[in-house]
Structures are given as structure tokens and as C-alpha cells.
Length: 438
Ligand SMILES: [Zn+2]
Image (cartoon, rainbow, N blue to C red):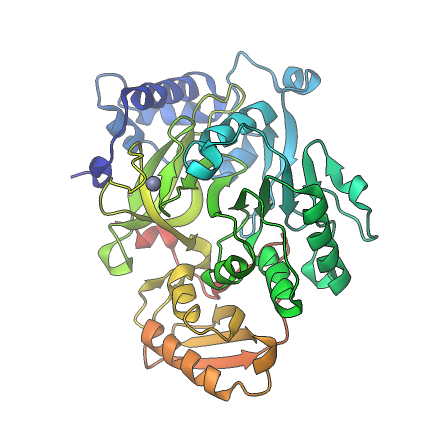
């Protein structure tokens, strides 16, 4: 039985799924090679999708710029009319991809995702935004400190103009707190790792922070440690929004805490891992986009591991599309027990979040049995960390296996990766991700 049969898909969704498939296969050059694999009309739609391969970044690069564009449209015309522009993704694990960016479609996709949480559904789109992320991901890059008015673009305030958090001084954190109070954004969109730093600063110095109507997390996996720190100083609802540059907004966390599929703008095909590695409810998703006149994305592997909810029933009452319990981190950031079973970033994060002295961490698996964990501890505990390390070691042993070799180090701080995002877990040996799937 198909694992997604527990979810409800409205007729409109099936219609859009069919349209997306027909348009892509019929008009976009990249899919010419796929046509022979399509069993065609007369075969159930899900089976047609299942028969097709997944879209890789490599194929997208090789066919850029016209590959995903219907053959009656020319990229040059779209660029000239400002309907599209080139955009560079800041992928953390693979080479960068250039995409055709369609701002109108992106906004529509975002607006649709807002309907999936009561705290954003009650707002008109768009709203006054403040954003806190690396300048590599959004906004304006500048080594010099820019005054607030130079960081406002339209209805957006960029709270940060630095590439790395290592450039932040206490004066920058004080500036963010001050500007939130002055600008009063309705939405604060943040990389949770960066917002946690502001939260700790506010907690440590006793500063009050302005709480917007909603805080939306994007950019990277939100650590439960950081969510707890943010929750202490902001009274706003915290909402994870999941999407990619290629696919727009895919999943949105509702007020009951589960993730709903943005069914107006994308189709999701689910690939379960084998039972040994956490399947069938844990797996990866392949995303197909709807309604983007300039780009036909079919079955794009977004690279994250998703845990399906065991039923299609959410307390919020929404019932369309995939219901997801958690987004557990990137496949490329998977680690393994000493027996070789997959461990998601979230599985480790859940263990470490139970140790309140930990502020941040980075786990590198050196071999099948060797693990190196770097820890940042709360300010007050850096000199008396032996007991904390003991508890942490026990947590690692219970997760990875008692026969593992664990090296724990306390460090003053941890740096984000080259794309301005954190990678908290990684295995430094080759493994075949495809071999983990059912
Ligand atoms: Zn819900």
C-alpha cells in the first residue's frame, strides 16, 4: 500500500499534478529524455510520477537556462521584461545552482503558505518584515556598519549586513534590539542560529525584545536548543517555514506544531528509508512545482529527511496533503550508529537539547566508530564542564552505541559554514544515500 494513502488530496490537487506533468514533459527541454519512461495517459497519475527519475541539480546546471522553461517562452524575453532574473542559491552541501527567479510566483507561493498557520492566515500578504540571516543569504553585504535607513528595502528591514556572526559585536546585538523596537515588524524572518544569539544576549544582559506577530524560521534546521532560547525572550508564535529557492514554499508549520503541505503550489512524492534506517515514516521528499509559468520543476530532491505523521489528522483541522511530524535535517548531514544505522540531525539534537548547559554543538563522525563533538556551553559553565561532558557522553553512547569512541571538546564558539549556515552534524566518509532507501 502506498504510504501517502493516509492523506487526503483534493480533486484540484490531482488536476494540478496532471497539468504540471503534462507541461513539463511536453514543453521543457530537460525532460525530453524522460518521455520514454512515462507510461502516459491511461496509467494512474501516481504511477506515472513513480516511473520518472528525480530531478538533480546536476541536470539543472547542464540544461541551464532554457532546460526547465516551456519551449514557447524564451529566457531572454523574460529577463528583458523583468518577469524573471537569475539568482544564485547558497546550497550548503552541493555546488551552487543558478535559478530563474520569478518574484511574482515566489510571493504567491509564500502567500499560500501563510494560510497554513492561524497566526499568518489572519494577516494580509505581504507584511512589514524584518530579516535576520547571514548577508550571504539575504539583504545587503557590508563590512562597514550601515545605518538602519540604508538596510530598509521596500517593506523589509535587514537587521544584519555581515557575512559571518563572528563579525558581531555586542553593539550589533544592541542595535538589532533597538531597531526591532523602532521598526516594529509584523513578521520576523530569521535563521534560528542567528536569532538564538540575539536571544542569549538579551537574556544575559536583561534586555527586553520587541515581539512581532509571528517569527518565521527559514534557512536551516532549527535546533531545539535555539528554539528554547528564543522562546524565553520572545512571546511571538514560532513557526518553521520550509522551502527552497527551486521549489518555493513547500511545508508550513501550523499552530498545532505539525507541518502541512502547500498543496496549492506543489506536489510531493515521498520516498521512505528502509526500516533499518527509520523508514517507512522517515524518508525524503521529491517536489513538483505548480503554477510557475517560467519553470517546470518535476520531482526535485530537496535533500531533507522528513518524518511523516502517522495519520492525516491534525488538531488544527487542516487535512489537505502530506502531514509531516518533523523535518529532521539534511540527508547530507546524516551520521550513523556504530552498527551503521542512520541518525538524523534531529535525533542528536533531541538528545543534546535535554542538557540545558549546551548552547551549540558540532558533531563530526570520523569513521564508523569515531565521533568528535564540539560543544559551546552557557557562559557560567565553561570552567566546570566535566560533569556536563559526562552527561553528554552518556547521551552520545545511548544514541550511537556504547562501543563508539567519543571525543568531546568545549570550544568558545562555532563558525557557520561557507554559505552562512550551520552544519551541525556530518559523517566524514562516503556513503551511498540511495542505498538507504526502501
Ligand atoms: Zn495542523
